[in-house]
Length: 112
Length: 175
Length: 142
Image (cartoon, rainbow over all chains, first blue to last red):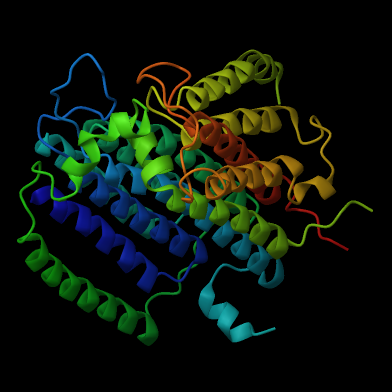
């Protein structure tokens, strides 16, 4: 139980960062932290006690393997997380070129 | 096993708390790398080698991109103290956090204990999979054969993200 | 970059690319597969670009938009999955090549082809993202 609780505390730390920070880079970092906690939760659900990594050896038929389905979902999600972070960085670069600041309150006040 | 994962997750939480409170932006970005690399150790402890390989390279690439963005701009986070709007944001953030934590605590009391495999479909995926797909790696069999649609969607998302980055940055040819 | 970095990169970058190709091709036998091998191959290209500067691979800015390799490989992925609609049982994503014995290099039907094409596509995408965000971002487009 305590591993699930710690995983969710990591998610809440990231959520607190998104809500209260004023700097755009800090918001991007907090979003990345929330994604990491989701991957950890998926991998925790699929673990079976005494199991092995899911590579089948044909010489040993009765072997307990770890569940491969959550690992397949997380494999796709990691690469999509990279695409999302890079798109956010592109938007941040554009905003910095125009307004010369990372602070969201000053950008809202400038309204070029 | 539970003790090891709990210790590493505790270190990740400490790194995350430092990352959102650091004054210097470069230190914050490097502390974001701590969280990513701690996840690699957790994946190896949970017997998932495919995920560990992907996560370690992807986290390195994310770190390179973030450092390149931060180094070419201002490096400090300018603080002007907490005014009224900032205090309202912080209190609202704390209230949302506590409410969500209460609901999640009630939800995980209904999950099975750690290590029993909380999903019903685990047996159906493992038992005949090596003969049905013909591959020894069960994760590759699930990703490309049982769940091929998701892989096609993921490849489409990557291509769309590349087009989006090029369109946002408006890179034109050299004159 | 200094001489030490350039010499080390000349020795190591080829080995990293070869390791990535190994992980892609043996994706149905050992841990790895298309995505893991693809990002490792992209890492080899990023290492060469960081050590030698952006003029080394003779890239023009026009090529920073979608390249041919990325588009052709994703078209091949779609073609492989649509072929199942014309042969046999008329299912999308049909595994139509013979399956062989578990544990051989040539086995598992159409899965090694999927691994190779997805690996090439992931490599091209991540390299283009890196070029657009890190190398080419200082110049203003006039």
